[in-house]
Each structure stands twice: as structure tokens, then as C-alpha cells.
Image (cartoon, each protein chain N blue to C red):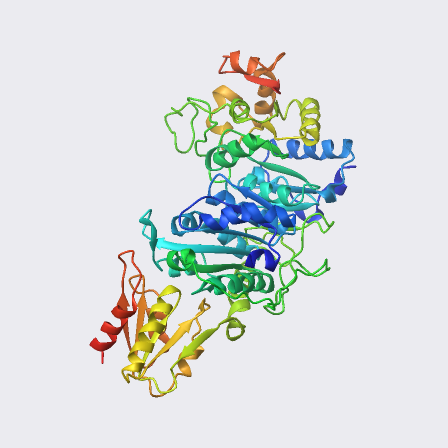
Length: 253
Length: 356
């Protein structure tokens, strides 16, 4: 319970659905902060719109800036540039950061500004009812792709690499120890860090795609264990070709 | 220069004609006062960055023109909802869309007033000279701090690019941001007063959100009470001080039978036209609106009883005229010009002769 001090009591009960991975990610972020003994009063957590944006706001007992859909990185840029003494962390979803906010993501990476961007990637628009996202795997059933998604998805780590991010890692909410380790590195990185965290959404994605991702919320989390393949070298990000698996690891240049 | 005098220490922008000179000047000047300049990837990002910087403690601004303003509006709505002080200079050009980038217009009067979603009040100032660009920039920052809202400096290409000698006022007072308090960050529940703007990094554990929230910043997205209270706060904190905020100038109005109501560059041509017409013994006067929003409605109630007709020349299809009509008892006539050129004094004289 030592993480309780980082959470606003008013924030409970948590708004997340049963089986949502975001609670695990929330704990991983707080655990990383605790293990690093960071002063949370000198941190600012910026988020956009969507379920993932609710991880810091209102849960975290810290300065939180809950912005508009797609815009958290732009706001975070202003905070960090004006007061570089603050540790600025963006926690938001895949749709927020890579669709509507894609322009801000690539340019912040290009600037290599010292921000830690943690993408809670559930490969769907959860809060708005399960529409297809730029991260949705081909063939997935969603509210707007009843016959299966036809467009190829983004690999967000490749995108961050191409744009110039200098610390890049992917993990899942099943691989919690590595997740905490990577978040700690991201938080201490001097430059732009990007974390792609696979966090299942049973409510909007899982129940429509039980054949490929597990029949229950718990099954969906366990499925991450089976899908994950550890990268031994960063370059595997570009050679890994199995679309049914998830390559996890650090992809730092 | 006005911005730096007012204490502006953060600028984020994106190039757009005819406002880019402001950004270029800020890129040169801000580092000299330990300020921060950043050129962002678009206008959406620029507006987001200045709001972020404002919460980090900065007096912050951006400058743009009509199409860029359109992109900024979603974040301007956020600044209204989160009561974030910031200043936006809009050097208006001929639109809609890309239009004529180097040509003047007054087409954004309603865009700044109503462009973001929902109900709110903003403040918009309309300069007519270089000296006033300076003074009104300071004033814009002061209003932004006092009311914690976005304030617009609504220039046009003609005022924006004019070169003239100017005497800059050195005695303008500057409203400073208050030190840390324990007051709620978003007003109180009793009245529409504005609580001091807090900042990140002081251990206040601020919760800032664009969702409807209570005075401590906690989301209240299902409460009719908080929705109603928030909207009325955003409107009434400005409305209740409208007479303090608004300003205007009257020239030759004591015995005027025809009154020209003008703003921005058009007010310069109007004054010249009136001086010429007065030499011809015409009883004409000028009411120059320095504040466009909130609209200075009370001045129309106190007009000289001699005024029988009002002429409103505008570089748009008639945006301020409807406000004038709402608050005037006499005939209100429009002279509208939207061909990307300024309204000249001789055109106004011609129009005055027509309505004689």
C-alpha cells in the first residue's frame, strides 16, 4: 500500500472497466516513481482524451494537466520549455498520441525534448465505443470495421525511432517487472523517451475478437504472455516480421 | 516590445502571413530577457504550448492570422474552460480560407467571439496605430491576468504592416501574477470572482482539465449544477466588469447628426473623412471602438441626441454593425468592403454624401 500516497483518495472508485490493463500500467508508473525516489511535486503529468488519459487525471496526487484529444505533447512542450526543472510525463492512449496527435508526437521526438511519453496502447478507441484505431491489427472487428480492419497498423516504436526519439521501449501489462524497469529508464532519460505499453481492452476490443486474443479479460492478459517475443537487439524492431506476435524490449539507438 | 514590457516570457507560434514578423521579433528579443521562444509544428501545437507554459508560470502569447486562428480555436476553448491567461494576436487578412494572405480584412471579429464551442466571453482589442499595438498588447496581458481568459489583439494587415513614428507610453502599469495562495484554483462557489492563477511545481497538486470541473479542478461531467455554474462564471466574470474593460474614443460627436462607428485601420480613414466633411460644415462625428468584445454597448445608450444616422464601415460583410443595431435607436447603415483593400477616406465621404 506504499503507493497510496501518490493517489488522490477522491479518485476512487477507478473508472476503468474490469479486465482493463490501465490499472496495472498506473501502478507500474507509480512504482517506478517510488523506486527512483522522485519528488512527485516536481513532476507534471499531462494527458489527452480517452481512457488512458484518466490514468494520471484524476488518480495521481500531483500536478495533472488533462488536455484535449491529441494535444498533450504540445502542452507538455510548453510546460517543459518554460520550467525545465519539472519532470514532465505524458500518459495517453494510442489513438490520442498516434492519430489525432501524431503530428505533435513526431515533432517532439524530432526535437528530442526531455519528455517521457507513455502510450497506453489498447489498439482501439475505448471511451468512444470501440472504433478502429491506427494501431488496430488487420482483420480486427471494431465498431467501425464490422468486416474486419483493412488498413495496416502503425508500429509506434518504429514511428518514434524514425522521428528521432532517443529512448524507445515496448512492454505489456503482463510483463510488469520489465515495464517498471523501462519506465524508470524513460523517466531518467535525458531526451525524448517513448514507451509503447500494450494494455488490453476487453470491453471494446476483446469481446469482439475473442478468437485471436482470448475469451475472457484474464485470458486476454495471459494471451500477452504467449504473444510476446523478447528482442535481443534493437535492430530486431526492423527485422521482426510475425504480425501475430508482439516484439517487446528496448529499441534505443 | 509591448509583450516584453508586459512580462511576456514565452512565445510559441507557427509562420503565417501577415503576422510572422511578430514571431521573428520574439525569436530575437525573448532570449535577451531569459524568455523562451519555440516555433511549433502547427497552430494547434502553438496554442497548446502557450497554455502549458502559462500553467508552468509564464505570461505567454502567440500571433497568427485567420486560418491559423481557426486551428487554435480548440485550444482557445480549453483556455476558456481552464481559465488560463494568454494573449493571441490576430493580424487579419482577406478570407475565407487561404484567401489573400497579404491583404487586409476585418473578417475575424466574429471568429474570435464565437469560434470555440460552448458559451463564454472573451476580450478583443482593436488597435489603429503602432503606438496602440504597443499599449494594447500590455493591456491585453493585463486583462488576461485579471480575468484569466484568452485576450485577442485583433489587428488587421494594414495596422500590422504600417510604418510610422510612434511615441510609446512608458507609464503603463503591468498586472503581475499573484504569489502562491491556498485559494481554490478555479474561482469559488459564491460569486464570479477570479482566484489567482496558480502554477505547477509548487506542491499544490493541481488538477487542470478541459472537462467541466468544480473549483478545485475535479471533473463534474454529470452535474447540471456545475455545468450551469461554470458557464455563467465564464460569462459573468467579464460581463460584470464590461464598463471597466471597454474603451472607445469620440471625435466631433457633441453635435454630430451622422455618426461613423469604426475600428482598426478603418477608423483612421473614417477620422480623415470626418475632418474633411467638417471643413464642409457637415455635422459628422466618429466613435472609434477600441474594445470590440465585450461590446461597448453602454456608449450607444449615451449618444448625443442629435445623432440621427449611424454609418458602420467595415472590411467585412457587416460583423460589428449588428451589434451596433442591437444597441442603437436610430438608423444604422453599412459600408462594407471585402475586396482585400482598405476602406479609404474618400469612399467614406462618398457614402456620407449618399446618406445625407
